[in-house]
Amino acid sequence: MTTTTFETLSAGQVDLDLDRAQDDVFGHRWTWTGVMDETGMAMMETGDDTDLPATLRLSFVYEMFGPLIPAPRPVTAADRRAALTRPACTTPSHQAEPVPTPRTFAGLLGRLRGRSA
Image (cartoon, rainbow, N blue to C red; front, side, top):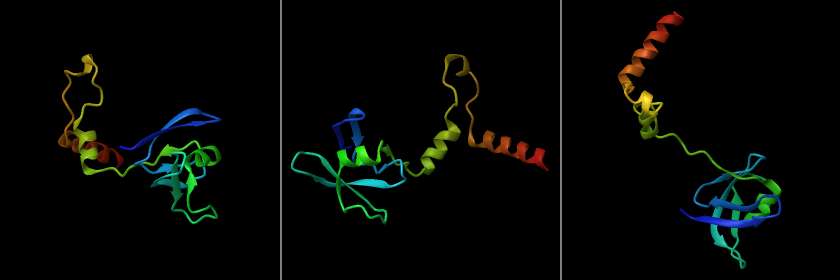
């Protein structure tokens, strides 16, 4: 994971994970070019068709288009399985309850489907 810390006028110190694409408030997706400028600031580019220059400094992108948030990653099959098999609540009072499984989840969906008919 490549992270960078930089100082901004509006937000103070900001830490960003450069390995992930970043979304700005206008909906542009910014990615790190893998290059740093002479001051050590990351150079960012957007894949969107805009009138913006090819690459911009991260500090400029953050000040003009920020704040930047990490772009969502696609949901994997492992993520789906973990959501179905992991207990929803892990507090001690709920740990004695049975752990939901794909079979119990399918049963719940079947019961709900019967209600809508």
